[in-house]
Image (cartoon, rainbow, N blue to C red; front, side):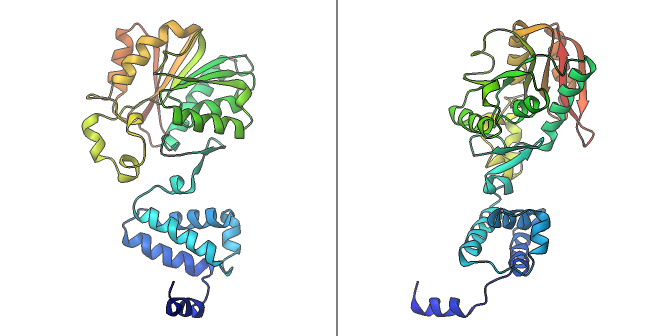
Length: 297
């Protein structure tokens, strides 16, 4: 840095939390970010290592140069449409704190509906305390299976993924949440690496139609791994595999639960009926859209 630039910087007052947020808000608004105020606050909280209530109380706090430069880097990444939680590198799902990377889908609230549906089924059959065996297919960050293990204290699980990088993230998340002793991670495609039978088989598979990938928001299209999004020409490739392979892996009375696209309930249900699945049920998400498919043999 030139002496002149150093002199200019030295005469600039260090920004406060409030002034830094105001500047970031203007930057994100100019980039067309949908929730600029929230995103700026979350990124600054991450830089400072504080929560929402603390940042309100810290409105007059001066940022150090290191903090300001880190915040500025985060804001520039958000301007380029990188999602907030990918910038932070962590996201909470069902109360479980998860590390995420470009190797895994960012866990989303809609997927919590799958966890809800599984737990409602377990409760309705009075099996919450049973030693259930769970298989999570395409585990990604491990969000679904780790959420279920926190709620089902006597359950154990296996989790498969075709991506070694995703499995490393999921294993780290299991360890950081003290669940690693109750879960086995397996590398492979769909149910191929599994052995034995399971009471519950769950999955959030790729279900976007190939032609629709380019229409997704850049936060998704350019940051979530394509292998976790692309469900083939009609978006149903994964369900054909899952429904075809799961029947031989279910215990008597077992059940499968899959996340589906908002417009795929009829098609997935038809596939299931053609493969002799019964007790088919579709559960809606928090926005009222069809989101979770459940069935038994």
